[in-house]
Image (cartoon, rainbow, N blue to C red; front, side, top):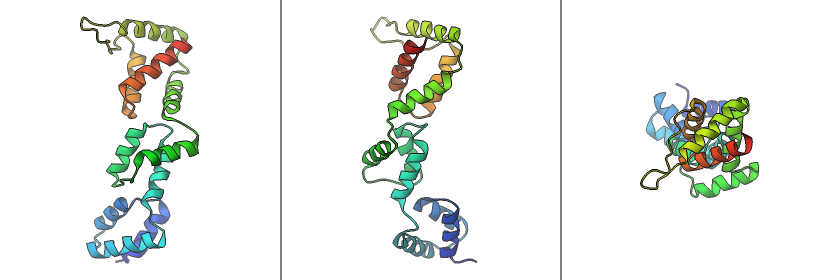
Length: 178
């Protein structure tokens, strides 16, 4: 069997990995826990393994099409817990000169740019119907009656954006473009 150090270098040469992913891959290949721990420690010391660097690269890669909340959730699933996740996100957003609102607007535009004007007008009319308040004074958030609008909401919610942010951004886009 190839030593854990050599296998780790091979894996890291192919792609940037978090320590969690590397440990998981080494375990699945049958390496002993002690050897894995020693290898990971050596990799950190040599600078080949760095979870903060991985987190920054991950945020840079996915910040153009996902919400910050979803990105942080995915990082946690990969075993990465930045000391100050909001600060890290803010730094990357500043480096990339973008904000979460800009990402949301870009995604809405990309999904609706080829939608015919008649459908946009129908969306605007659907939006007007859903803005009515019920007997308790609550705004009805149902977007029934417009398949394209439902698809857009579902797409953006799956990307991790909150319903309120999606609704506000979609309403703004439709108002400006319909």
